[in-house]
Length: 95
Image 1 (cartoon, helix red, strand yellow):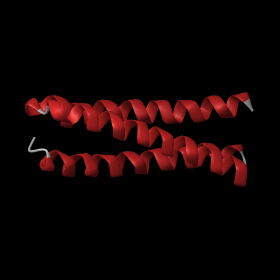
Image 2 (tube, one colour):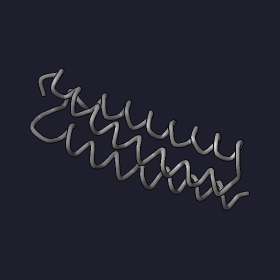
Image 3 (cartoon, one colour):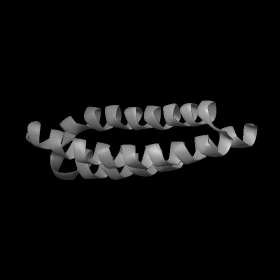
Image 4 (cartoon, helix red, strand yellow):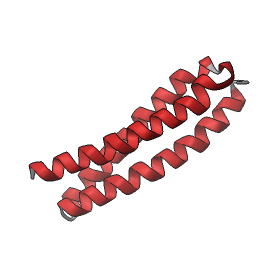
């Protein structure tokens, strides 16, 4: 059980860290888009929450392996959606 929890944490943390670094670079630091820092942070927390909720649902409905898999899939899809949403929000903020 501990190994599965550590695997879920690693999946969400590694994908979350990579996605956060990429979106922070793209939207918060390039071209003086300082107004996007809060948006990037909110989306990052949302993606982490979605990944963890998917892991809980996968564990509850199926198994530990399903929880790890669903956490990875949900985190990946979450970052893709966050990337597009942050891009659209950056236009709204005029950044």
